[in-house]
Amino acid sequence: MDQTKLRILSAAATLFDQKGYHGTSVRQIAEAAEVNAALISYHFKAKQGVLERLISYYFETLFQQLEQLEESEKDLLPMERLEGVIRLYVTFQSEHAATTRLIQRELSVESMLAREVMTLYISRWKHGIAKPIEEGIAAGVFMPVSVEHVLLMTASQLIYPFLHPQTVREVYYLEPASAEFAEWLLAEIMRSLHGWLCLPYNQQK
Image 1 (tube, rainbow, N blue to C red):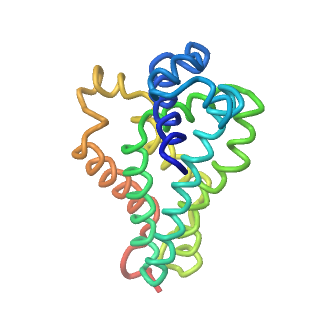
Image 2: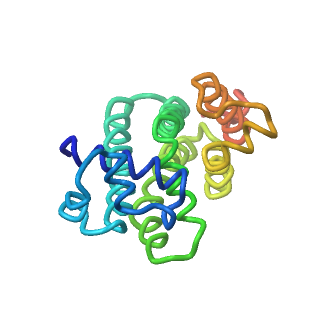
């Protein structure tokens, strides 16, 4: 994607996060991106097109990284591959916090866009975590748990700090944008996954 489009998407992500989608105008996006408003119409048709492209670019970038990770770690043990996926998701969400928050807000509202995002992207996001868990269960190194339950608990841990950063800061006195928080979050999610999935050593195949 060319730099002009990236500037527009970056500016839109920040403004949508600060002012909300409906509180942001095309003119404001153009001013923040330092481009002519006509360019936004040319590249994205309208503000809705900016939102849709912002979401698709976010997930396309994430899934490209996920595919590369899965290929590079295909010979590792299931728990090692699972940790790699969780680390990628935590890091990616930290680096794209405004867009992450925007997407999760959009998913909280019943709409055609939310249904499309769930169908096109969230199922793939979920599968990234599910795959090493299912393979670990099949190999006999993970307990035969309800994968859906584990996925739901893991998703809640992954998403909440980025959806509610102000609550995390002002109620829990933690800084969700920091590298230290990302490392702590990764460690705690993996601690939970070990507890849910790992068989006692003498029961492993």
